Length: 177
Length: 348
Image 1 (cartoon, rainbow over the protein chains, first blue to last red):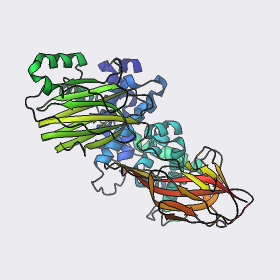
Image 2: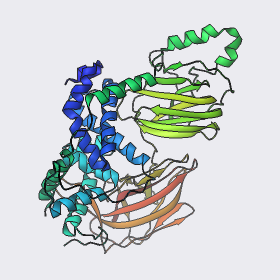
Image 3: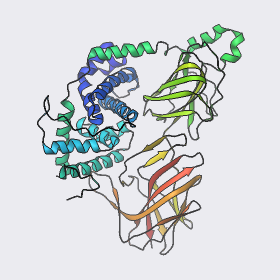
């Protein structure tokens, strides 16, 4: 898949984009939104936005971070539109399918990530799932690298607490040990 | 578990979880959505020339009416775009006429970059053009007459829905981040019988945070702004961030202070509504941002009197203290922010 083909709006570029990046975009969206249907919508919207806006991309080497940024913005947009909907806590589906067997720390980490404020969660997903650099995460979320570093550090601290007490204490109740 | 081990485990868990879901989107589905999207916007790429030809075809009798439709009148006092940089507008004709919408006043501190008046009926109007250098935020304001609604989509994928009528003096607004993009596009779809005006403005930030200077006598130091905790714009936009007590990377300025004297602070044009001061040190560790840490030996406070912040005295010390001032302030337009500010205070 070449960025040039995307810029020229060749229809087959969309197929290539889906094949190359679809699963990763879906992963980012799912980890932020915790909803498969919403994540699939984000995949489609991200691909179409990339298809229509490829001309805005100045640096071809920054294509993947640019794509992840679009995906994150769409996911956060979905999240914003749902912000008035009170969601029940979603327990990760740990059995069957392609899932690996559950382990306590895995559940604790996933719960911990799901409990992070949404933008902090997005930073964690982009850094540790999409493997973006801190600078690219900062660009994606329109924050300074310093802010992202601080958010990631805070997230790690909170996740460490989740690991220490996987069965319930909120971060404010738990203490560092 | 140390950070490195935790990060490794987090990567493993997130990748397992994120990659465990089969891709639920097919190429056909994407192509279908693309076709649908294109069919929804058949006329969005009409050229400026085509729009002008449309205007001419209607004839002189409607000149007064059409002068307020599908054109880009000069905006505020900002420089008009050059011919190559002019915002291009395409608009469909309207079956009904409701009445022109008075001009929306530019928002303070924002740079107007495009304005379009739209017809009623069921048309689609597109306003696009180059983004001025340094603009990373778009502010789109919309007002309309008549009965119906507007659906506005803008660069940055933000949307604004407007129920008409909406006054020009209190338009509906939406902010959109465009990053380092070079072009902007605003698509307006109206329904019902309406006329509307959309004003597009740009800025490098959503809200300009004022300079904060701590002073005593003739000595003064500009405080460095930390992580912006929240902003609230008068028209209803709010944003907040989860800020750690990160000290800015830029070197902090130092205020020299004799023992038992108190520094003060005021911000021109802003009313300070809350202030909380702490005294401490900067804690650094390799590869991590510098953090502010309060120190028990340096207990200070800040009081607000007539929008002036008055600090309590700082204890003398061989090395400068770092003062962190958490401020909430509001300007005349009603915009407000909460942010920490930092400076060294050296008490001799």
